[in-house]
Structures are given as C-alpha cells and as structure tokens.
Image (tube, rainbow, N blue to C red; front, side):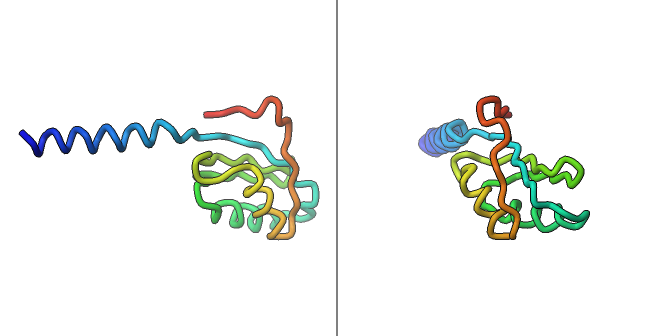
Length: 100
C-alpha cells in the first residue's frame, strides 16, 4: 500500500510541474535574411536554445515562428540566439502573440 501511495504522490508532483510550464508560440521578424540558406542557420540557432520544441523559418516572409517552453527560455533568449548567429530579430506583434 505504501508503494502505491508513493507512486501516486510522484505522479501528482510530475503532473503539477508540467502544468506550471506553458508552451508559447512567438513570431520573430528577421529582416536581415538575404538568401535562401539563411533560414537554415537561423533555425539551427533557435533549436539549440533549451526549451525550444519547434522553429519554422521563412525566407520569403523574413520571419521565424518558434514554439518554446516558457519555464525554460524566453523571447530575449530567442532573440539573442538569432543575433549571435548574425541575424538580429524583433518580436512581431507582441500584443497579439498567440499561445498554444
């Protein structure tokens, strides 16, 4: 009986931790993209950021849509990653940034 109680307690703690984290989706403008291979570099930089689960980069739109865990990273870290890769980014429509 004690083992079952401990297992239930462990499961509850795990679930409550996951409930605190929120997946966010943000769109970054990356105006300095100037060739069709730039998105490869930008995506590689973004997916290295801890907490990023997806990054879709469009050369035509000059933007990156990033899905991340807000308990592990934030928009400033995403912008830093793109800037460190040579592509400074700006938050697109911060007032209407959707979440998942």
